Image 1 (cartoon, helix red, strand yellow):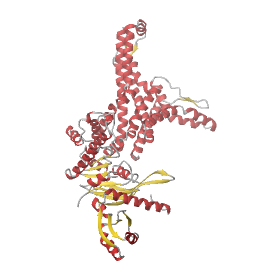
Image 2 (tube, one colour):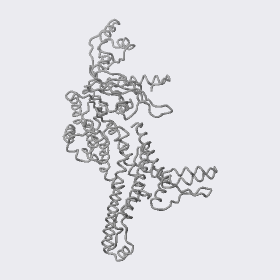
Image 3 (tube, chains in turn brown, yellow):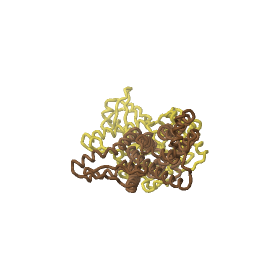
Image 4 (spheres, one colour):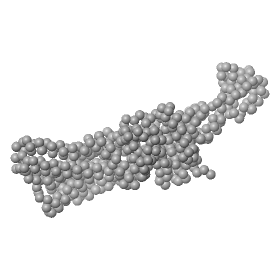
Amino acid sequence: MWVSLFRAEWTKIIGNRRVTAGLIWIFPGLAVLATIIGLLLALFSVAFREGLQADPAVWTEVAILPWLVPNNPLGRALLLGFAAVLFAGEYQWNTWKAIVPRSRRVPLVLVKFAAVAAFVLLTFALTSVLLTLGVGLISLAAGAGYGPTPDGSALAEFGEDYGLEVFYAFLTTVIASGIAALVAMITRSILASALISILIAIGETLLLFPLYLLAVLTRTEAILHLYRFLPGYNLISLFGWLAGETPEGFELPSGEVIVDGRLFSATVLSFWVIGLVSLTAYLFNRQDL
Amino acid sequence: MTEAAIQIQNLTKHFGRRLGRRVKAVDDLSLEVAAGQVYGFLGPNGAGKTTTIRMLLDLVRPDQGEVYLFGKPLRRERNVLGRVGSLVEGAAFYDFLTGRRNLEVLALTSNLDLSPRRFEEVLDLVEMRDAARRRVKGYSTGMKQRLGIAAALLGDPDLVILDEPVNGLDPRGISAMRRLTRRLVDELGKTVFLSSHQLGEVEQVCDRVAIVHQGRLLREGTVQELIHERSRLRIEAEPLTQAVAVLEPSWDCAPDGQGALLVDAPRAQVPAIIRQLVEQGVRVFAVSTQKQTLEDYFLAVTEERGEDDSMAEERGGDVG
């Protein structure tokens, strides 16, 4: 049943070419475009060739670049839009009424999450491969190096970094899908779901200011600790740790700076993933369609 | 005894709030649909037909009551929906996919491993085999409706629930739909539960019908039973004014403008009416029964009920 449901969902995603092209295929498309531009520059610009020879690209860094997209506001907005189309589309196109009598509701919605995540991750993986190969071609054309040598230790280190970035992109995608799915269930409109989800995603990261104000006015510093449990804060925090930097965190009125560890952020985000998916499944199971 | 394909027991559903009170869409509705027949489910707009159908398909959860499909309680044995095909309130598809691909998605969702031949069979049945190669986006309403019927029949269901299936179909399509509906029952042994506003079609195709109004069951029976329950008599009598005076207290009656009197009364009452007129000195020359259609019957009972409800509302009663 699960495989069959997944195939159905996959067929719908692949078939909705306009949406996948505009919101998701754009990433591998950009990788190809960047390669073409880079090749042209390598062939016709001496300055570009010399620049690349002086500061050669590193394939372990290039391969990870596409996975940084979810941390970018535009990238996250595209993900939210994509999830909104997939979840709210069933309401707007009135297709739940054809589907729901044919299968149990919880598997239907869980498979949707799985399909969105799988499709996004596969696309980023494809983008990563295209970009790595593309920059390799550019380096070759420019006569520049393209290290490091893929020996055991380099590959092991790369594998760990890559896995963490994939995990990060997975968390971001599922959280974005969860927000979009919940909004879709309420609004039943693609446009409203996309816009409201994006507003929530942006608004949530800006919540620090009103919380700060409230903490100062009520002289209750503990209020600010709520911010530590929001997904946006923890995504930024985790991203910082994954990039090998200490995240900035945020400052309490007392001057104390809060910086949460990698494990804390990963745990909070995991709770958000489980919570959003479970809540969506629970509400969908009770919803009149 | 014939197995009941559908059993609805005391089904009730409220929606939201309007003017401070919850709207009762379906009100303590009970009915039984025996297998192997075309069952018409009629009612004016807002009567609760589609809500009832949605509860039959687990799209809407009832507030009270139970739905049994083939004797199994839907709430506890949802798998019984695997024996049901449906088309609810107009066909809905992914318009970016082809007709065929839409059917494949539905088959996958149902976990049905169908042969390519099965897709062709159902598409042939609705004359959509060629058009199914094109994207649904370019389909007319009628084509979508036909594809919806193909989708309903895809899993070879025992019970087919069709909500307004002829909407958007041209006369040829309506006629084909009528033949297909009868064929499903007469040749393939299925049960069809049909909701429609096309009362002429319902009269031709249905074995039994139920009429609902404001969420409640008003009448249920075979088409012939219902039509004959209320017939219109044409009585040629003299003097006409006296005939009206005699019958008016008991029956709805009015002169037809051509020297006769039209009386809404069951055919079984003809001897009593004649006796009553003759006893009061009215000379009766001829009595004939005007053929009633299901539409006449439907309009009469729903209007009558509407008037009753208005009166009840004026008295402050809850008509739900």
